[in-house]
Length: 465
Image (cartoon, rainbow, N blue to C red; front, side, top):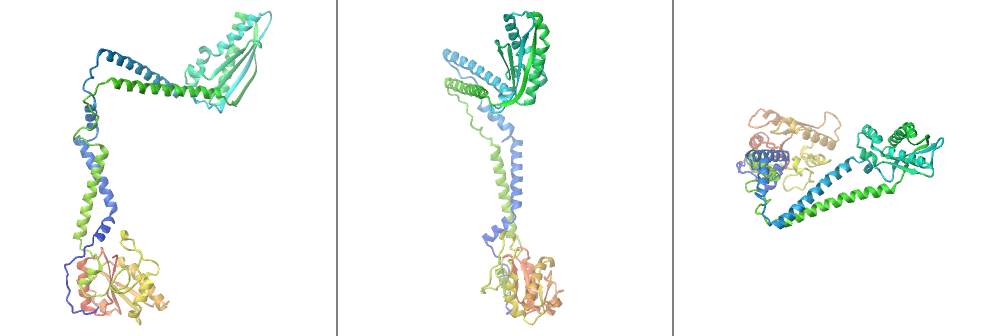
């Protein structure tokens, strides 16, 4: 140190930087977020309890928006409105039926370009003297039976569906010239279509004796039963027609509703928000903003009332000492700037920074084997600085010997004179402090101690500016 007899000046003057203040506030961004969430929850809960928002407010808005009485109409207009209401009810009932059909229909689940279909071919073979008219009647009887509810209902019950939905995917065609019956079953699952078709054929074969008694002796012979995947554009057209009907019905509902509204005279009721009530998003925003403001004010007050060191100028005002900052150079000396993250308090130094330290301090440490770092902080808070300085100085002096240049730490130095012996016995002394961590009062006591014990102290290094 130089000019140790110059009195300490401006001891109560504090450095105030708006930029530094906001940086220190936003370092506590987690606290800001937590306060915003807590504020939103508290304010929203308070609004719901008091009825300013929430279910009670929504009920009040709905009640206020509902018309108090039906607007009056002349007799002719009322008759027309009643007719349109009946028509709208019909369309709405149709929409309900269409919705149930779309949800449960097996036919609407088919893929027209990948139809799983099973086909069975059966022939009515007459035996004995059976007329052609009786053969045609038998073919017609088998065809009707294959599509009857009596035959298909047990199958539909096993599939847990309705007969009408199963009937849509089963078709039966008759060829009276060949006495042939063709049964087609289309189903989303190919194996299931085979099972359904086989059950229909088995049931028809079981009725052979009854039909022979009624119309003449014959045999029902199944020649083939095949399952395959086919493309059926007719299914595509039919499904499209169903969707068109659904769309047209919805359009009709909207049109009739609009026509009914046209007949209503203007009402004094309004769907505007009821005065005194707020929406839930608005309450959340107000609560979050209030939480942020409160936390922001608390952090600013904590900064203003803090006794922590804020800048290197505060050290210079305490005593006429050399102050080394992030440039590793005293004021007026050109040094290489060190990289830092302001929100992390400038704790990360770029590779090579301590080597520059060694280059700058080498002349003052020439011929010396140790350096004592004096700090008001705890030893573990400056241990990393001591280790890096020692490594850099050994590299500078080519001292590979473990007993070479060493950097020691004298921590927790303040008004106490317990460290006087260590400071006086050290070859070189450098004070190290951290901005926003070191206490201003303790730093002042440390400088006063150094001014009385070591006049050749190298100065003060302030980290985190």
